[in-house]
Length: 130
Image (cartoon, rainbow, N blue to C red; front, side, top):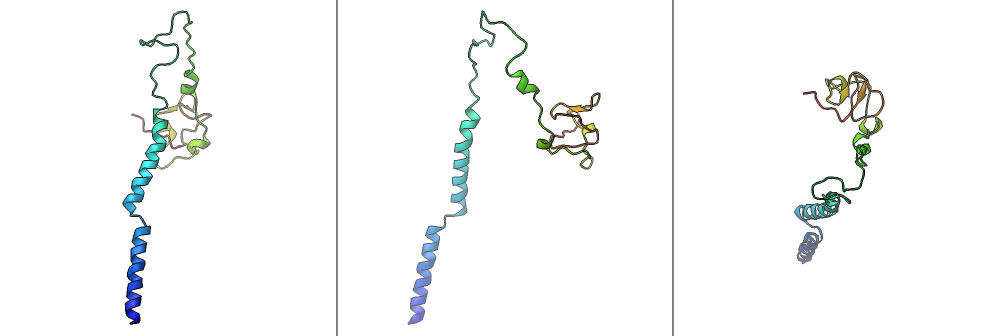
């Protein structure tokens, strides 16, 4: 008689566990939906192709002086810190700054990283010279 009660309790417990714990697929779909929901506005933020004061040809409006110093120019020339790209003065295997696409040998500098760069150094932005 006790075995019937125990068996009934087990079935009831298993049924409740299956109802309470969502499947892995459901959890992953939910995480994907939340992630896309958060990233979509960020991706679309810079999609406005027309800037204020520009016409459809992209030329500067009449009456505004044409200058070579654009507001986007400093951002294009901005370099990142050595710490942020995990720069180290020793190579990582065969990868070293001397063989990197971004390394400027004449001045021992980098196009992307600020400061003096050792030709034997390495960072996470390393890219093979073509």
